[in-house]
Amino acid sequence: MFNTADTIVAISTPAGSARRAIVRLSGPKALELGDLIFTSSIGSLVDTGGFRSLDGRVRIPPGDIELPARAYVFRNPRSYTRQDLAELHIPGAPDVVSAAAGALIDAGARQSLPGEFTARAFFSGRIDLSQATAVADIIDADNDAQLRSAMDALGGRIRGLCEEAGGSIADALAGIE
Image (cartoon, rainbow, N blue to C red; front, top):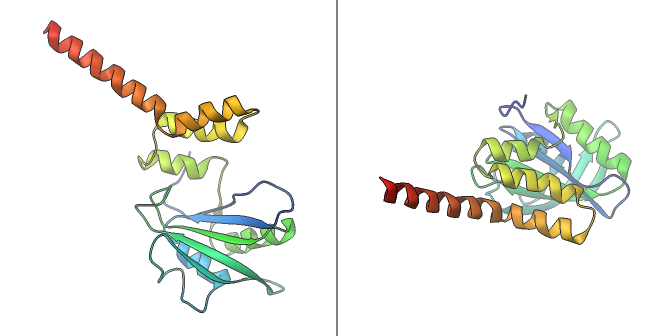
């Protein structure tokens, strides 16, 4: 199934050209691997505290393409996956984005499976099953009503209803006993 002990990488923006694209890393070596292609005059990703961003440059081998970039650092256990997590925001040319992800894979990251970042969040207890399902529902929403419903679920509405029902059942059982 999912191996949560390795470092994964994924392109986290839709396919196609865009002004910016996000290449996301999660796992024990996320910051180290990110540092292999990202540089900043402020410091390295490894030395940066959580919930910080750095402006810098991404250098993509083998042609040493160099592009402006911004990196965001999220430290465990306060990240989405409860692992060290880095996002590299780079120009969104599809070939460039694929090359950046490929360079990280060549450096030791593994291409994530679909839904693997959300699975890591679920397995670590960061989100519950209804919220994990809601992430997929948000991605697949075809209209505003579906999107609103999925956003409610992601916000914990289903969990709240279940907790309320569970409390009522526990009260009823206590009364019966």
